[in-house]
Amino acid sequence: MKAIVISATSDIATEMCVQWKKKGWSICGTYLSEGDNYKRLKEQNIPLIPCNLLEESSIDRAAHLLGESIQQWDLLIFAPGSQVPVGSFDKVDFNEWASSIHLNFLNQMRMLHKLLPFRDPLCKEKTVLFFAGGGTNNAVVNYSAYTVSKIALIKMCELLDAEIPDVKFSIIGPGWVKTKIHEATLEAGEKWAGDNFEKTKLKLNSNECVPVQQVIASFEWVISQPKTIVSGRNFSTVFDQWGSEELVRLLANNKNMYKLRRFGN
Image 1 (cartoon, helix red, strand yellow):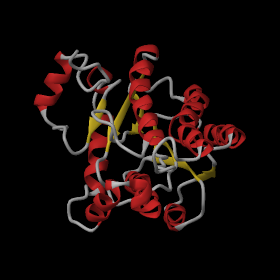
Image 2 (cartoon, one colour):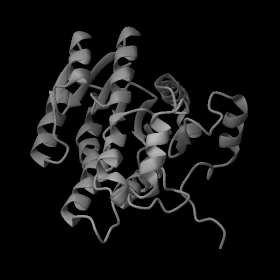
Image 3 (cartoon, rainbow, N blue to C red):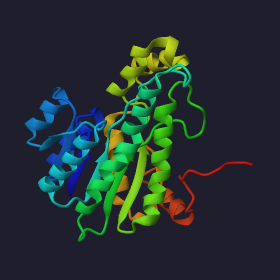
Image 4 (tube, rainbow, N blue to C red):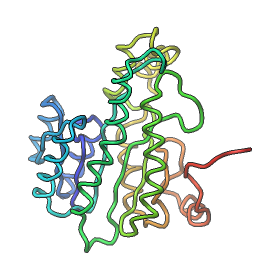
């Protein structure tokens, strides 16, 4: 397997890269800063290319270097994510809100557009995977930019699946995992985050968070499945019975399952 991981230094992605490298996969990725995860990946001799997903020139340069590094990919993972700005839409800075849309959605599409030509034409099951978030079933208060971006990614997977027949596109919600993404809520405080501030503190201090290994296993299951079963769909690490023959049967018989649809009236 030849994989590119965008934002490889995010917490879940770093663990993915380390484990997949040990399996013998060819891995390369991008990073924003040289923190602990960067050092850990460099210790595994994983090639890393700097990329600021808020700068178009940085994205274009990184995409070119990634293409040169791996030449042709089988697997492309998008792991960036930020909940900033936290707060009601009418109170947050609009430029920060727009930047969040660019980071969490638009510029991931820009990177995908640049990297699609580098996919391996000989691989029958090329895979592109994104990270989903909450908010598809209710209004998540004070996180509108992050939520709207994740919903856009869900629909984009379905559109890409319909338009590009030689690649499967899926998106997976990992659930509550102890990662740095929650720092935005803690830093914002109750004034801006509302009820989610206390909820986040309780979750992070409990034993209820989803183990990273469970998230990785759900990603590996999607990677192993054919396009007809998983492509264009939104999966949940926590709530879906991935890995079961029953889920595969249900997905095969229902083309609308796990896709963004109007419900009720």
